[in-house]
Image (cartoon, rainbow, N blue to C red; front, side, top):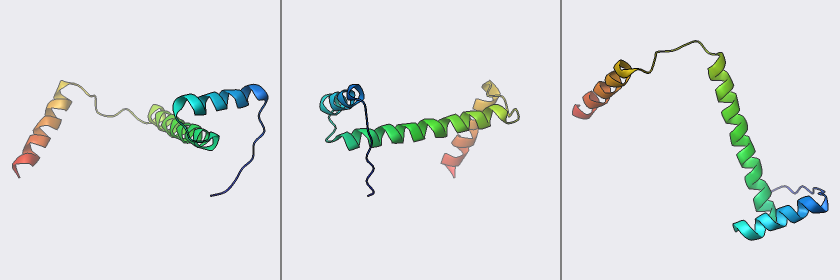
Length: 79
C-alpha cells in the first residue's frame, strides 16, 4: 500500500479525529479511505445518471411492461 501525507488545518484535523473516535474507525486513514470510496461511488452514479439522461427514450415501464416481466420470469421457473 502506498503512503500519502496530507496537511489539514486544525479544525479539519479535529473533525477527522472526532469521526474516527465516534464512528468506530481504527485510524484516520480508514476514515479517509472510506470517504474516497464513497466519492468514487458517487462519481460513478453521477456518470450513469448523465448517461441515462442523454440516452434515447426506452420502453415505458407501465403495467404492460411489468406484466411481461412477470410472465417471462414465470416461464423460466417452469423450464
